[in-house]
Structures are given as C-alpha cells and as structure tokens.
Length: 238
Image (cartoon, rainbow, N blue to C red; front, side, top):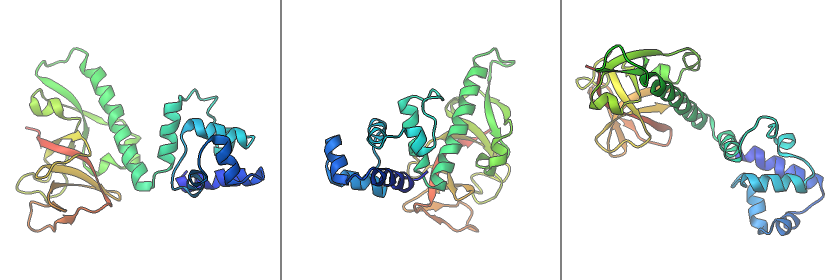
C-alpha cells in the first residue's frame, strides 16, 4: 500500500464522518496543512497518530487498512516498518526483500559458525551460484548452498559469496569467479560494488557519476536513481 493509497483512505474516512481537515487538525493539535499532506500522500502520520485518527473516524487500524494489528502481536515499531514497506515502489520493495533475505542467512550463519567446525581454518557463508540468484524470487524460496571458505580478513567481513556470470569486469574478475560480498549501500569512489537495476544485478567500479566496467567491450553505466547499490566486493575467493 503506497503513501497515496493510505492518504486516500484517510480522506475517505474523514469525509464519511462529515468532518473537515480543520476540525481534525484542531482535535489533534496540529495545523491543517499537515492533515492535507497526510491525505495527499506527501507525508505520513506516525503509528500513534494513525490510531488517534482511526479513533476519530470510529474505526480501527486493522479495519481501515486491512491489517490485523491486535491479533498478530506486532509491536508499534514493527508496524511502522510495515507501513514504510507498503509505501515503497516495486524497486524499493525488491531492495528490502533482498536485504531481509541476506540478514536471515547471516543470522543462520552466525548460529552455524558458533558450532564446532570440521576445520578450524574455515568459515561457512551462503553461496549464490550467480549474481541474478540474489534477487530471483524462485531462488529465494529455496535453501541456499553453503560454502566453506578460508578464515581470513576478507571472509571475516563478508556476508555472502556469489559467482560472477559475465566478463564485464575482466581482467579484475573473470566469468565464474566467486567473490566475497559485504552487504552495504555505501560504495566509496574507486571501490567495486554490486548494484541492482530493475531485475538485473551486476558488478561495477564506483566512479564519478558512472559505474565503470573494466572490460572495454562493455559500456560504463550512468549512476542514476534507477540503480541501487546493495553490496561491496571485498575480493575473490581463493
């Protein structure tokens, strides 16, 4: 549910009670402009204000917005995350989905690594057979492979391992190379990052307004708002 959809519901609820934006603003102790912003989707009230608004409109949050807040034992902080997720566009939701999956795998790996390992000089990381598998909805529903890697400075800071499936970064990385990836949206200038655009995930070097391919046969990619950084390449798995 987008901010605009939430705002439209708030407006419908107010009109159904024959109340003006000014009246609602006075009851909440807010100015009328913010009420208009909520109803247009320009801004969104916090959870406490949502509940107060629903009380003024003689309804509940779950009835008005189709979410059973009371019976699912969701905390106020969790509920605000849900509302924030519903306000995202499809690429934004996909980004959150990928990060959520990665964090679930990281938590699992922490639990596994706390158990005795068959080798004291190895670590266990989630392994993707291709970069595209990191955002493939069918792949995400399957159990991921685990790979044992050397216990070194690279693996200590890595969250996952993934295989490169093209030659756009030659001669730095080759098709088939397994790389360590740290999950982050902060890719410093000159570093090599993992990026998502629509449903495509690729590796490039961060440049000034450009994402640079190391293979001259591939064009550089303009770093516009459609591209989402999702990880930094730490190095190749030896």
